[in-house]
Image 1 (cartoon, helix red, strand yellow):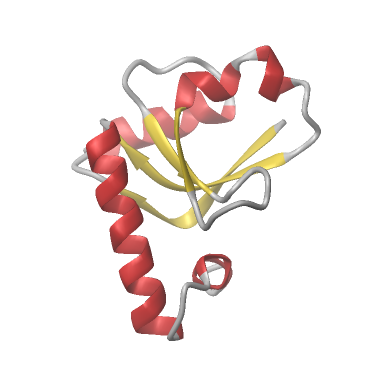
Image 2 (image 1 turned 30 degrees about the horizontal axis):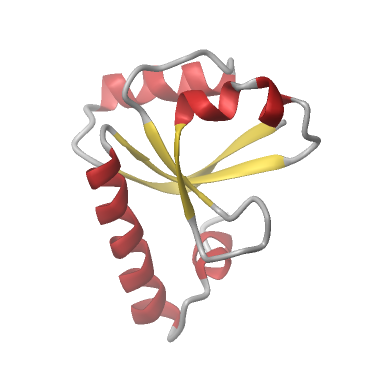
Length: 108
């Protein structure tokens, strides 16, 4: 399993210093209390998924040979839901449809 954080990742009110620390912990696959991530769907069902970051560190996901693309980082599930809404709004505004992967491919 590999984490890939989008260059234009959506976040809630996280300071720049705390955000840098979170990115480092994600890269090292270290646990973080109260962190929720918005990812692309892991099983081709839906547009996006919200996970408690620590859940993705469990052996079930670690054994999978997949790359998990992170589109949003939040301090609560409610904030993660707001991020999902913002991403969908931006996708419709910029691309004219629910093309979430296309929205993040533009910034790569």
